Image 1 (cartoon, rainbow, N blue to C red):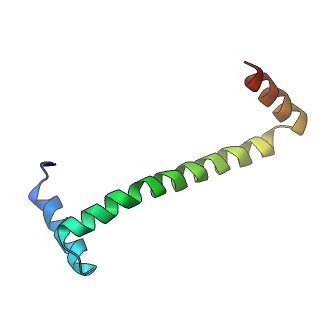
Image 2: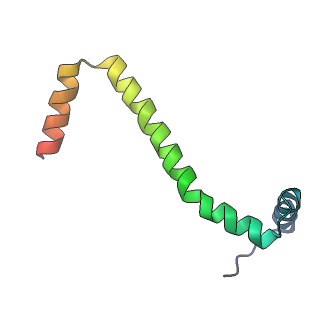
Image 3: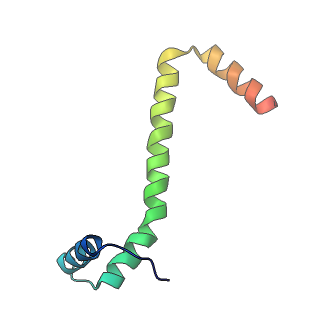
Length: 73
């Protein structure tokens, strides 16, 4: 796959790869492989924040009633 990137980005990739003792290709392969795990972690953190807000602002009865209504639809 060929993706056009600026020289500045290319240099940053080379620099980061060199700092880790890798080729730019190895560095990018690893970064791409780790991306889904980062996305899952970010999503989990977002859900935890939303849940904490919900638990602070609604009663248990309101939460279970809303969940039951949502699941039932």
